[in-house]
Length: 171
Image 1: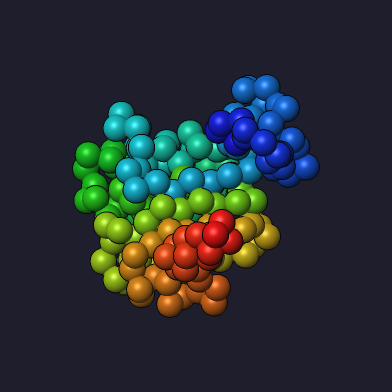
Image 2: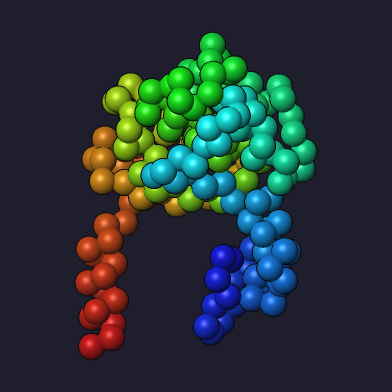
């Protein structure tokens, strides 16, 4: 969706991303995909609540109540008006999780979403991501080196196994 494919098609919610304009691809990604990055990309001049609400502007619309609910569910209900610089790294990561789920996306891409969290908050964050994905019928693609995170899922694929299978297929 960010780059056009060299061959084939990438379909997102029945839209062909290869033939869509850049603006349309941007809107489709914003409306359908939630990203949880290793680097949180929070806006430092905005409060926690505003960072989550900002993500909602690209979707169906800002819902202050739902944004507050998400922040409460990640344990930050008492920090709605804090700016990222006033939060620990783990708290910032939880704001990023809430922001990624704010538009109730159909696909959540999570790159080490618990890397900066203690075990209790890591488990709670993964549980929240799974709950919201389940509520919305969303798919979740998560990358993690944390065995405790991986154990929370029924289906896991090891990249070493995938790479090995691809090499065998090419041979």
